[in-house]
Amino acid sequence: MTIVRRLIVTLGEEIATTSDAQGNSIQEVNVAINQIDELT
Image 1 (spheres, helix red, strand yellow):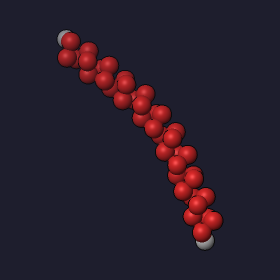
Image 2 (tube, helix red, strand yellow):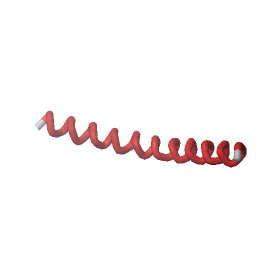
Image 3 (tube, one colour):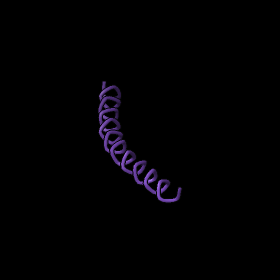
Image 4 (tube, helix red, strand yellow):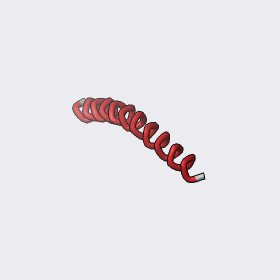
């Protein structure tokens, strides 16, 4: 049971960090698009 509980906690942490990472990556993509627009 402790192994299953650890998996659930790890999954919850992964989901929390990926939601943060998605927000950051979206900002990075927007910055990259702006840089490409300036170059072209």
